[in-house]
Image (cartoon, rainbow, N blue to C red; front, side, top):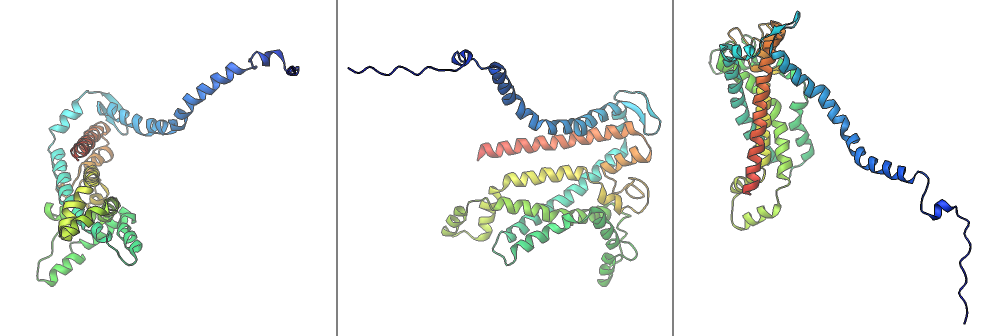
Length: 326
């Protein structure tokens, strides 16, 4: 009966045989800390930038709104909610709010409807489709200053092309800047021209995700293309439609460059001789940088922020209901 060979003698150190490696516990501890802390370090730059450039200015604006704060002389004392009380009793604030809502409604409804139609056309097989898709985005790429200056010339009272075209039909020239309805229409035209193509591309991207099988089934059932569009396409991109409505609402509340550059009075943020197209952001600009009343301007900014926040909450609620009902 053969005897099994005895194990060869080992020359490893005693602490290795006992399973203890120098620094082993420290290495395990560092590994655990690394696994837990490293992900936060990766996302920390966003929160740092948000705190510096987002949260701090927001809170500091709220602090200024509670003070009688002059842009040149600085803090003149704590006044509490006096700026907000004065704001909600100010007829110029409600005039600016009405103008903002009017321009938003008149520009957003046709803009989104036109964007839907353009997206439906681009969703069909087209020659040089990429060129067409890039072309509809071109107005959004052009500087808003250039857009406003060109349209201000088009809607000029004396030498504008729009009045020249009206004259060809025997119509009297319109002082586009001098009246509320005409100034709103001119500013609305700028907004529609600039943002329709952008929204059309958003709708087009959403339409590409609608299952083609639904269209094939509708075609087998004899549904027309128009019927398929309203029964399949529009319900399929409802979240995107809601998103564009809310984003357009926030953008409409913050509308500034187009009406400001359309104003030829040369006064900061007034919006015409009779404030006929002064928006909320123009009113904020007038108070803050025209009259140097930073406390009052900060109160306007916070009211505007609350309006934008409510729009975002409405978007969240509507999307949840749509997903819950689907």
